[in-house]
Image (tube, rainbow, N blue to C red):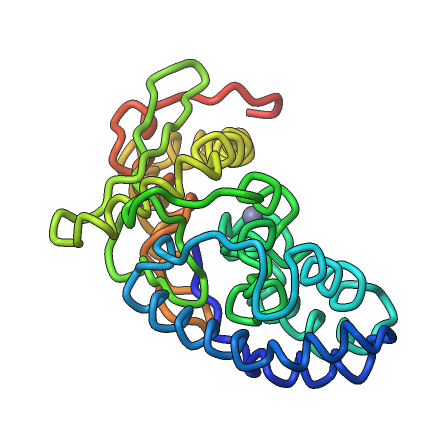
Length: 288
Ligand SMILES: [Zn+2]
């Protein structure tokens, strides 16, 4: 998971624009009358998010004078609809806020939608509230769709509020198979709070990141086999290990960005560099 900067606007300008756009006078009046409740809910959300307590916000069937169905319609019919003012002004701004257009939740696939961190099906108060709308890939969005955590430690990570780059939590283990493969685990630092440890493990489990990272590493091992053979031929296992260590270190220090501690590449290269089995392995390539 990679953090994303908080949205540059609150829910109020979204609501101000919505009342100008909606056609039904009765809906406009009720939405206008619901503004204080929706803004109060946004403040409560910010407080809960910082305290890792968003799971405590109860499900609801309405907000102010607006029903769940009406708030969903406001999101689906106006906020998301291509060509609408709300889409061009707010939806698109949130969509492009993730660095490189990569989904912050899996940090693999590309952003294609906005995810309601608290689902809009159960939390109409946050259907169009920017801090609840996180850029996301369609796979992560589908998996997360209606999840409501039962306890603090089961809450998925929230890219606007959580930072898990202050310690190494993603670990890889080399499997001495033929060809070699790698398995991943979420193994957070023991000094992290139990809630933070639980959340990173749950995030890793629910989003199926092990399967995703195994697939990428399988391809990586195939791609680098030729080079590994040449390094081994010229300098033995030590040359292979040094090269892999350097690759891991390179990825911990991306150019123009803050250093990072966790990615499947860092974990995989680090584990491969420490594996005597891998560093001496002879890869089957066509042009040795
Ligand atoms: Zn994703």
